[in-house]
Image (tube, rainbow, N blue to C red; front, side, top):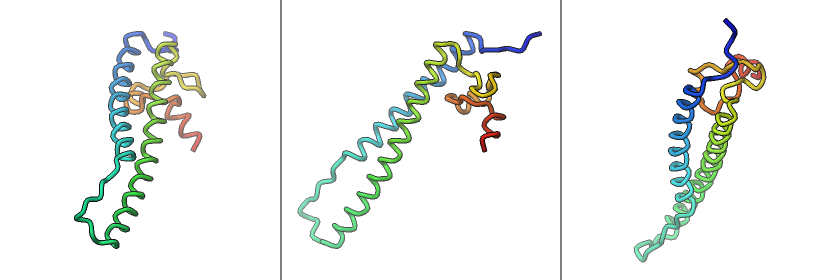
Length: 125
């Protein structure tokens, strides 16, 4: 029997469902991070300690920087997932870009935007 060169349409549909769920969650996480960055804390009249205010603003800045980095990573993750959906439509999903062989189902379920088989990924290390 010849080695399988691509996943069947039914299998691609399964992966498409997994990816769409991950995109929904990733977008929700991204929006949460984006809101964290843009949300402005209001200072009310009870805030009378200048030292506390400086420390609080420093912590807020650090937190916004971290949220910004996380938001960028999340956006990149969403783009990788969307690219995987395009590969599904083109019926090239799940094919290792280095070896040309199928990436294992287990790997694609764990990392649905993977473009390298475990073997090819290990060779890169």
